[in-house]
Image (cartoon, rainbow, N blue to C red; front, side, top):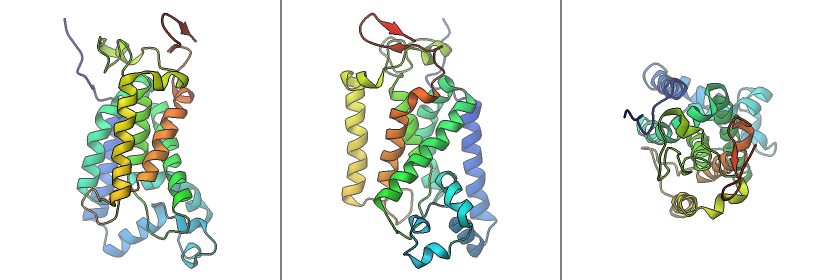
Length: 249
């Protein structure tokens, strides 16, 4: 019997990774230092932009438009190829699983919303900060949370009795109220939050940059992916598991 690869990469995931790589290549190899600084000021997420008491906030380019688009555009920029590579490694399995379930349009919308949630959490915890935040980690954290809602289910792509093909990505999802009742999900949650808290408490850096990891943004994206999963899940086609032997639309 032919079995599908564990993570068959959907075109939308390949496309997103290609766009991210192209953007970083242009910044790295084509732009001057001053031009790249302008790009960062225009498209990265800078909390000082939203604080009128900080002089820098009034000097940043983009005006009101940048106050809106940078909630998402920061996720398209990376500090280095290592930073990009680490994010790509995590996006390939989790982003692929979510894209196969959601479809391309829903996946892109989900990516944008979880990126914005990560920026919002970063803003709430770094009021007035002048340093720019960049990277797709918050959105990727959102895909991890979303995958957790269905990937460990019986017949799912990470379940003990894994299904074949697209059916593995259409198993009933775990309702939010049941998330903490699944031991594998709890272990995943503890490990994920533990790693992020380790980065926060130890001020570790990642991706070849001296700046610490914006771990609060990761948590913002993860929580959004966990809580808003049902907004993007193509229900009622995919039913929700609601306890032993019960299904509901």
